[in-house]
Image (cartoon, rainbow, N blue to C red; front, side, top):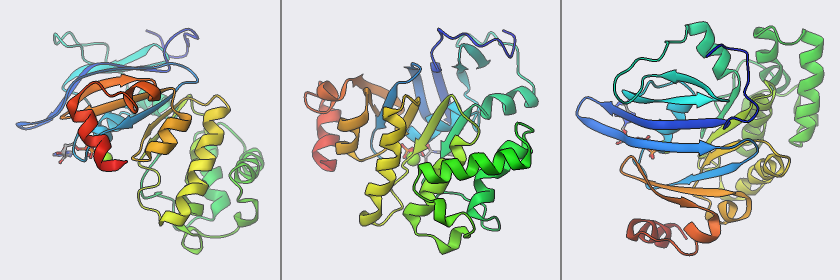
Length: 261
Ligand code: ADP
Ligand code: MG
């Protein structure tokens, strides 16, 4: 498959029978997942079920032992039977990764850069925009997440909720085809959770493709097109929130929901 020819009809993200292990420890045990363009998918599951590892495989921060991931129909990795797909160069992997936004639990902002530069840095570093173009975009994105007045501040001067909103603006700056969120509100004080969820909800309703790991069940019910429940490195069940959250078919899903609701 040639890089650069985007298949507009393809899934935004497709995970094909992905297995991941560390020594004898099996972390992902055959994950198949399709995220269509514009779809909002929420992944739920107990601690240790492999949610973060799955996001890291999608973002090419981890390489699966078996299976592969496609972005916009473009595959990377190895097939189940060991047939090797053409390995992508480091450069092609970086190009793919720049089409994916990643928002972490702990924000991971650059502490030595202002809020504005946190958002403007990547479009300049990747050669996509001139510095003035990136600054203009960063100002627009900061306004979108409600932080226009914090452009000159440094991350340490912001609350956790504000820092996470900067991280979302930074992810948007590369105009990604999909944004992955790994427990974006888990590190926040309870009173700051709502402002971050409101920003993610705004992205969801504006048609951005989102793959979100969260324990916020109410939020999942409101914004998810699809809820995926993982346990033991497997997808136990998936479907619309009205099915998975309100009428779970599996005992493990019911047990999990009874603990987090
Ligand atoms: P979750 O995000 O659902 O809590 P993770 O994907 O972080 O789960 O982890 C799943 C399992 O994989 C855990 O048991 C964890 O200890 C293990 N794991 C994750 N990363 C590594 C690693 N780099 N080396 C060894 N084990 C790992
Ligand atoms: Mg995790």
